[in-house]
Image (cartoon, rainbow, N blue to C red; front, side, top):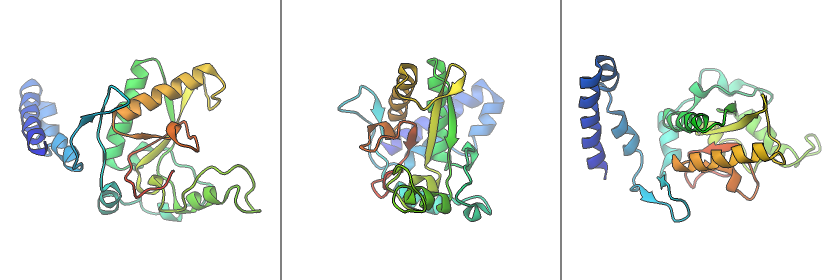
Length: 215
């Protein structure tokens, strides 16, 4: 499988160089399709429940730890800091996330990124919510710091723009429809969607391995 993808990548590079010198220059130094495919060790297959292609990522946590580092000073950011910059994500996940957002846009669903890379302090604060007297409220996550894909740039939280405003209200049929579309597109890219979890997280998508806890 990997070998055939590498050959396909080389053919794609030649085609791009023929079609456009600019594209050829971008893709020539790094066979991106090959690099992306090489981080998976299971073949593409049809999902049993969806008529879409999916990939099961394995060893993703190890890949993230060895190839991804937080921006300088990010680990010192406090629990109140919310980051929504997609450029802080792991390149592999960012590629898939942007593809999801673009496909949703084409189908009439505009989404806004609410949060991407998350500091350990913020993750612990979210975990403590609803579990400690100092942080009352609903329990929102089952993951402590470094147990979430958010700490490795492999997760993002999104929300649809409905009637000109960001909406998280799933009692609104338009919001719910948009979140369901997000789930379909995310799964088509091989991502995990929080809308299928026991603790529903409609706007959460991630590239995960079984090493990660929820969120």
